[in-house]
Figure 1 (cartoon, protein in one colour):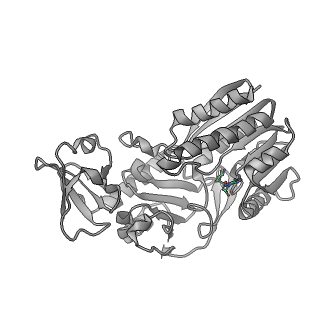
Figure 2 (cartoon, protein in one colour):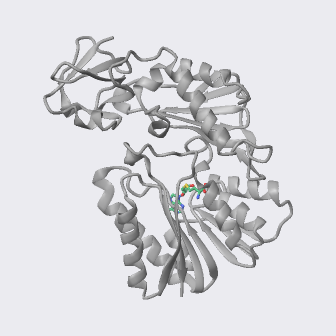
Figure 3 (cartoon, protein in one colour):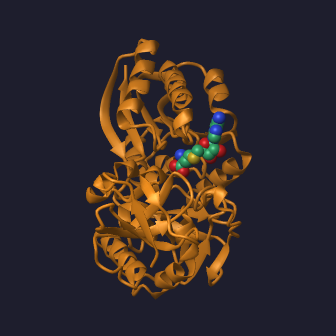
Length: 392
Ligand code: SAH
């Protein structure tokens, strides 16, 4: 295996088990090193520190194994098996729940790899050239998992791989074929379209937060802003909401929401779906129309240089929510921007609350569910944060 040599003093973050080696830490790259290749990382003092996938860019190596020992040839099989055991122990695989995240990148010690399961199909995303390179091995490991029932593996990395890598990945089935499925989440049915949908087709990461929302829904008028597939709306209807309005700027998302609502509550008259921009919709409604508003926007800050504007976006959106919510109402507000920390998000929301002049209390502090684990050496893995607020 080829060796990468670090500059003096640059071994510290690896010794703390942070799984990324930045390009600035590298003294010398071996000749003919290909993107996606597995490499060894050595300190300037001649100690082998780790083994991982090499790529061109700011993150140069994503570490798969720390320490001196030779990397296990079955490392992917082993890690995927461990990830599956964890999901089983979390009781996520049940007759009434067949969708879950099986592999959450660094949080499952497989940096650059995401795998979501919908029934018997695994939808796999590579975020690194290394995982792209090893995709067939990973697909084989997925279908070989005992008792997981995975038959099809759909590979969807056209938007997740670094474009500089020039890999031109094609989306498609690596194993089997099955276009779209009915997934069950906590007993509710959802049409999942991994071919055309965002990300892997569904936002599994809101599962526990949707369940909490259900408990708040009885007899309330609810606005589900940025509804996408209508996840929160379907839970709100099951929770006994008197009315649910789902809003998304994408008409495709509105179709998906309507289909999912009809699937679970055929012929219901409590739901309405509106294709409209969030800010325009919030401006158009009278104050006090809704008892509960869900604000789950797309990541407003995807890169560090978008952080300032992203935070302004969160403040403005939440300000509109505070202005419109009924007295004694609830707001479920979220950010899924990885670079926006919990503290930054809270500051944006609290500033909005203060600008609105409303009296606001925090009832719940939300985050991502247990099938999206965070390796404590990689705090960047914590991306979803939310607050349930009581607004007087
Ligand atoms: N809450 C959803 C996930 C939201 S994803 C769930 O639980 O699954 C973000 C959604 O916001 C996308 O569907 C996107 O179409 C929508 N969106 C993006 N910009 C918007 C805007 N300005 N107004 C309304 N919807 C928007």
